[in-house]
Structures are given as C-alpha cells and as structure tokens.
Image (cartoon, rainbow, N blue to C red):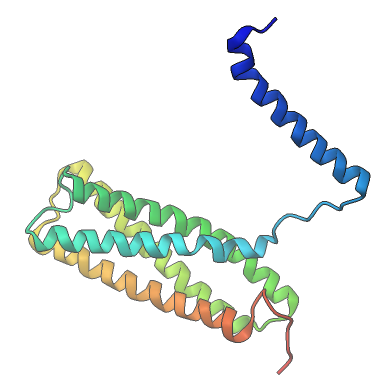
Length: 191
C-alpha cells in the first residue's frame, strides 16, 4: 500500500511512463518510421548566433563601463557580466567553429565551390582567435590585478571593435553562402 503520499508522487510518473510506452508501441504496431536525427551540417547555423550575440553584448557592456570611467577588471557587477559574456562567446565560437568545419566538409563533398567557404572559414577562425585573445587578456588582467581602465581599457575596447568588425564580416559571408549560393540547404547548380 502506497498511502496518500505514494499516490501523490508516484502515480503521475507511472501514468506518464504508461503513456510513453503506449505511444512507442503504437508506432511499432502502426508501422511509423522513426525520423532520422538532424543533419550534423545544420548544427553550425544554430550555434553561430550565440557567439554573435554574446560578443556584441560583451562589447556593449565594456563600452558602458569605460564610458562611466570604470575598470574592466573591477569585481563589480557590470565588468563581471561583460567578462562572462565574453567567455561564453569564446566557448560558443569554439563549438560553432567545430561544427562549421564539419559543415564545410559536407558542402565540399556535395560539390559546392571551396573558395567562398574558405573565405567564411578564415574570417570565422580570425574572430575566434580574437575572442580567445580578448578573453585571456581580461582573465589574466583580473587575476594579476592589472587594471583595464583609461588608456588600457580603451585599447582593449578598440581591439574588441576590430573583433566585432571581423565577426560581422564573417556573418555577412555566411549569410551569402546560405541565402545566395544555398550551401547545405539547396542542391548544387553547376555554373
């Protein structure tokens, strides 16, 4: 006997399990085919928006901190949030680069021209290295107690703007690959 607490906590789990099993058995009986997993080449376009947004957010936060005369390595809320956004942008860019390399290989295998793909890849990897460099610079400065205010802070911000320019150029050429050429979303048309 489960008692009232047993019926309260275990009955929903048992009934949900029964529904899932019935649904699975219904698929087997009625002959539904299981859908294949998502194509691995489509993961890159899903991931790539995270480093774009996070990097732009980090640069905007850094601009606000410097505009107020603050220090980018201060352990206050705004500089810390900027550093976290920059760190997450670098991690997301690493994942996007890995899956971008996989998508490039598939596109070449399907017959798309390699030159525009490599142009996008070069810009993306340049952005990745700028992100990693900026993240390491800020983490090291914070760890060693080196302030990034005034001149050093604005120099950091200038390199961040260079990274944003590279990022937006890579994004433009990535959009051209998809919307103009149809890489990994349309059949190859020989020119």
